[in-house]
Amino acid sequence: MTNQMNIRVLRSYVGGFAWPTLALAVGTWSVFGAACYATLVGVLPPLALLLVATVCNLYSFTVFHEAAHENIEGKGRGGWLTAAIGAVAGVMFMAPFAAVRRIHLTHHQHTNDPANDPDHWVATKNPVMLLLRCATIYPRYLYCYLVKIDRPRTELMKEIVILLGLWITAVAALSTPWADVSLYGFMMPSFLGMGFTAFFLDWLPHHPHQETSPVSNTRNFPSRFLSVILVGHNVHGVHHLNPRIPFYRCQRAYDAATAPLAPSDRQTLKSA
Image (cartoon, rainbow, N blue to C red):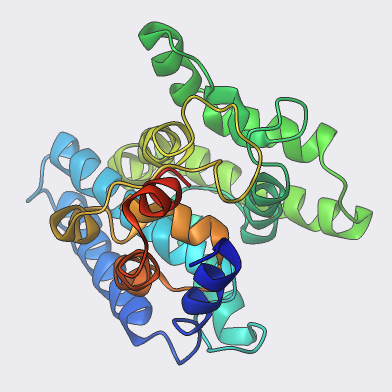
């Protein structure tokens, strides 16, 4: 089976309203909201909120990711629901939807290109540098969007206003009873969540960051268990071959695309 044939198999997993994505969004945001309220009334310690909010941040990124690729409302382009879900998901990691979407799509267009891939920031073999790069991915993305990536001026101005609004609100809340919620529920998790996301989605599947072809620029880690824990990102190569496949079908799509292959060809796709 050729790579073209594999891609054709993958296409059959595109489409349909993404009810699991909507459920993930509602579930994640409900847990996050409950944790924030519990901290506000003194039931949940701030550090516990930080842990819960960071985990929710990670799963909310998957919701944002699906909205960015317009995978929520079926085969057509995303409408108001996609935009709304993406915007709410973006609030959790303190970043405007359109800006992060453009950054992510630029990554798809220039995967592993040192000059143009925003995620190439984490391309290193040094563990200490990897930790530092993941920890600073938020300001790196901000720099890429403001300086390196082409985007309409109207979009830029709108996203700057949203970004400033988010952070001004969060900082202002530090002098109110909402201080712990702002710091431990939004500000710190936005950096921690993006840092963990940078490791699991930017470094791990693309290391050693040398290949640029869609069939070889991403690694897969096929596993039913990992598929649940990492919500489909364990077979990130499937996503890069066809970004319109929703996260909850990626493992099945991988299995279908690789099952008929000869061992040598199967290994080729596994490394894709």
